[in-house]
Length: 137
Image 1 (tube, rainbow, N blue to C red):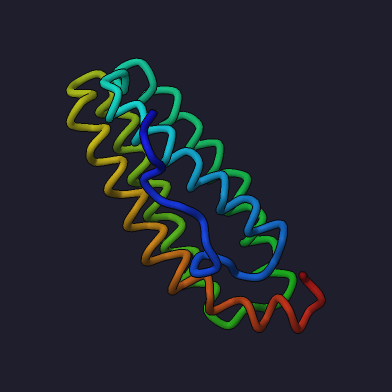
Image 2: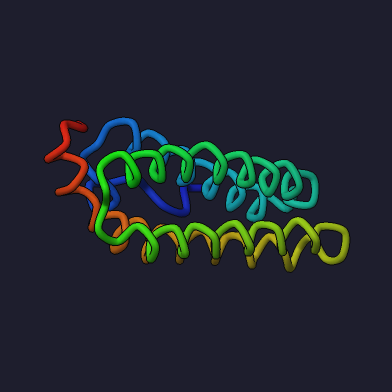
């Protein structure tokens, strides 16, 4: 059995239960893909995971962006721009699915790891104060 690629810890937490649970799902998808890659079954799993990332972007970014508008978050344009980059990248991955799944798996793993480290740990932390001041926990 393969160890997790990335373990959830407080580094990734924004201290808002609904959003942390959604972020944990992204970590789970990353770990599933990594496990499939390490067990050499990723060609069978990559398409399903990329499609799940499309769904994830719809509902997770929808959640955050709803609160951005509701609470008049100061950095809304910058943050939504980052979400749009995620959406574009996942669409790019979807377009590449039929070409080289092995190479794509590696790209997706690295992309998700970087997204978690840069977007969630840095950008998402910026809205904590705004959200908490407006009653989210």
